[in-house]
Length: 161
Image 1 (cartoon, rainbow, N blue to C red):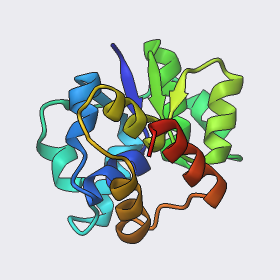
Image 2 (cartoon, rainbow, N blue to C red):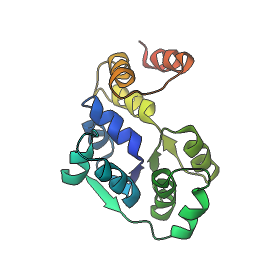
Image 3 (cartoon, helix red, strand yellow):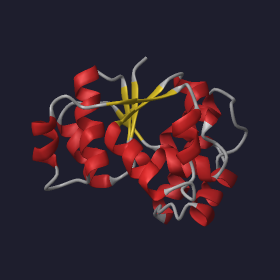
Image 4 (cartoon, one colour):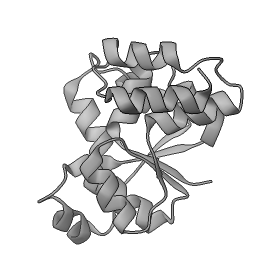
């Protein structure tokens, strides 16, 4: 399975000590060079930075079609743009992306996307975690994860919580 991730799913899951869920669910996670550079430039204060530099199951790959990345930069940041194009180049099974604009662009290009909430729902379904609510609550508190009350309730309903 080929899985590409943007920055925020990694930093957010690392902030609440749940980054290993990505490895447990998907094996290897591929990040574009821009995501690596973005996190590394911010230093070790950013959750997940040490992990992207040291964990063998997080691989950094360059995007070859920079002209396509450049076309997306008027709508999205570099990490999202490279993530989308890298997912297309690799024929990724899943692109993990939370930002609304990026998700719309990725879907319009035919990519299969999930976000951090989808990851948590899948982890619960596979019994890797017992409950989603405490993790989402920690995401809101520690990672400043933004979620509407409607989506929050919907996710908990789907999770049976």
